[in-house]
Image (tube, rainbow, N blue to C red; front, side, top):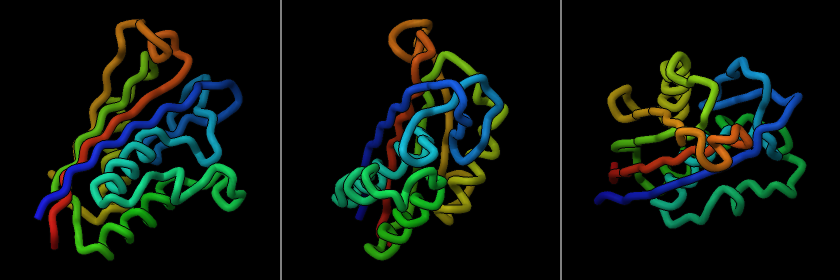
Amino acid sequence: MFRVGIGEDVHELVDSLPLVIGGVKIPYKKGLKGHSDADVLVHAVMDAILGALCEGDIGQHFPDTDPMYKGISSLKLLAIVDKIMKNKGYRIHNLDTIIIAQEPKFFPYFSKMKKNLINVLNTDLHSVNIKATTTEGLGFTGRKEGIMARAAVLLSKK
């Protein structure tokens, strides 16, 4: 049995915060504003998995009104989502993601990001894909006001 899920997340770029994407701290002049570490890539992955499982979304599981999640690493939250997935008897069959931002360039960090996702989700190298694109200067990402990420996941029954 297979299940498909999609996820999307957006956070605003602001001064004086670190930029964390895929669990990797990326040198950049701005970071993403959010209750947790605002890791848009990991948030999109979590929403895709939760959606495939018909388990709501990350806002239901990790509300931004709960001080317990203030500044938390999104990889820790992903580990909780992974446990939900495994308890329901599913595993990652295929995960495809995309980061949408005008800058910085993310390609040099793909390997570390992929390794982080693979380690937390306990899946193999060939099950996870990460890519990035710009919007050619259009929209809020093109104006460098924020970063967006999308994820699509195919889960299979163990």
